[in-house]
Image 1: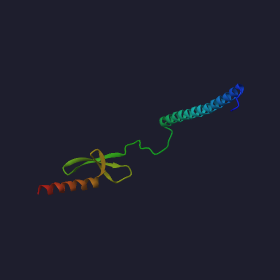
Image 2: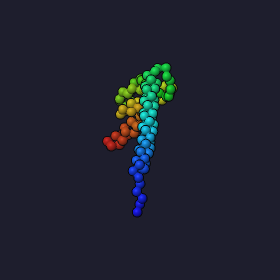
Image 3: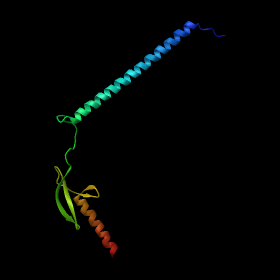
Image 4: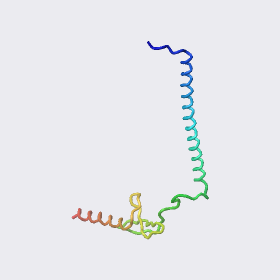
Amino acid sequence: MAAAVPQKMKDYLGRRVRERTDRIIDKRINSFSERVGQTQLDLQNAAVYRTDPNMQGGKRNYGKLYTKKDKKKIDGVVKVIYSKKKSQKLYVKSKGKMMNLVKYKKMKQKTKNKKQKNKK
């Protein structure tokens, strides 16, 4: 037979267990609230960083990437020619995408040749 544990001992052990679990829970809550607070500070700092014109950092393209150069007639279609900064390459907008002018001409030449073969 097992020895009976006195009621005082049960109360004492129960209280110790409750205190310990309370401490563990409090630690977790505190660490979580600290992380939340730090995240909020980071977000506030990021908002200030984005809006402050004096803050410089990172590589950003705020300006236009392509600039209009002129208009040319390619295979009977007038196309707007674009260029990039610090580059001699020319680009054309085709199906909503920018494409190198040389590659565009080759592509159009291939489709033109296919159409001629189909007609024969």
